[in-house]
Length: 315
Length: 281
Image (cartoon, rainbow over all chains, first blue to last red; front, top):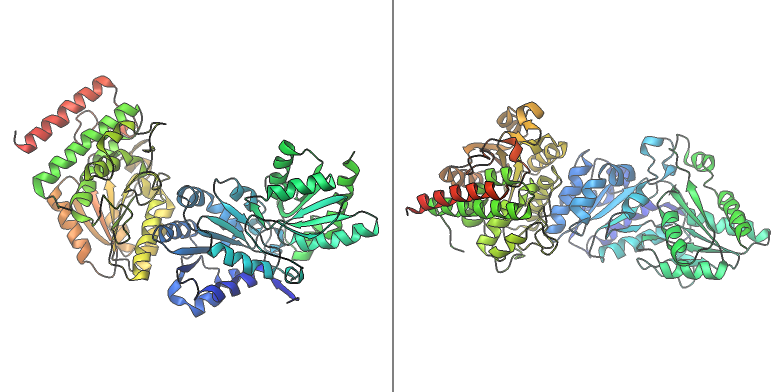
């Protein structure tokens, strides 16, 4: 495949692609069909598209009612309004009764860019991970996104799917032996000195960080952890035992998301140094996506720096 | 399922009152006030209006019900038990760690409960989703809900109202239990809802105003809802919070308080006397 595509665009294409195969699939949006990329589905399947207006909480509730009636609703809005505004609706109306609603948060993280802090959700992964029975997925490229959508259509239960706004390289289609399975991380490059466990757009950057580190004689393993919950504990523990130190990387707060999940697991089962890379307990700001990512250190060099620290902590 | 009418509905509703109040008493917690105000409507729904099968609670073509004011679970559970969804004896284990009857309706553990509710403002949205699902799939089953008047302060209720009108959900009927009281006092003082009929009409709902303790009016309103095409129906029912237990009636203090042994004895005597009177004994 190669090339670049935003995971939100790949998501929008996947909805259309799978529409015929899954007639129960219903798409709900909250006045953001252009941005969330549900517009193509809306055009192709107007009878299965429901614009709920700028009312995200009601959208989640409607989806719960649809799921209770045997349909497969996907709700769509920005991550901040999905996981943020509708947190309690997701918890009580969707997750508590374990209903088959897929909550899709597009424009996750700070690469939203220009819109600034009000629209840059860095808390969604932690918020959604906290809810019992939720599955939390954050694909790293367009190819993986398509497979994630298919997997979620075949998974009966509540899930949160995070999409990114900006176009990024497609690479998982060219990985040998690559297979997508919910709850199973993918080792996309081997290494022995440190393991970077990354999710979303940080996976591509982790691959670049690995090249930077290789020049310095540091061998880094890279794991694509597309499913943050349920966490692939076996893969994390294996990496901890084999490389002795872990760096987590996510376009989200370092508090409670992927970094939190990995640190919690390792502290109790295989205490090795864990260095979390992400947004440090702060709000985002306006700027181009690239400038904002650079400002907060969400770059290949940012990951490499955390890896140097992680390696130095090994004793 | 045999439909009940007239006096039989009243007898059933008063028996449900006694079961609900007893369950709250045994649990030593729960919400009797609102349970007693909406139990007449619940009785009509489950013993006359709705097409349900207690032996097959998840029957695909059943009518759906959402108790948006989920704290009135004691009334819902009592009616479901009397209708045969689960043994009446189970009501004694309301809110107990040993049982399946959680403090608020739980669709995964209580047979007959179609939607888990309890967080106010959320149930009506789910009911909209259900009614919409029936439209999408071309099914004829209907969806019913009961909201509290205090609950109407939640913005999500009005989001759901707009959506139901947008999709012309004439297969949706929502009762508003206008008992006029909530935890902090009178609804008109806490957050006024009036003029409620005009508000709902402005939201493009068909509105019917009734006495929520008059069974013939409840039945007539439901019949009118079924005949109304192109828009959802709201039944504004004027009710008495705590109805049927003298010391609970119109007292905000009985919103979420359990009667002690002495209080329950009085309540029981009053309700049993009313049941006897209705049965003509």
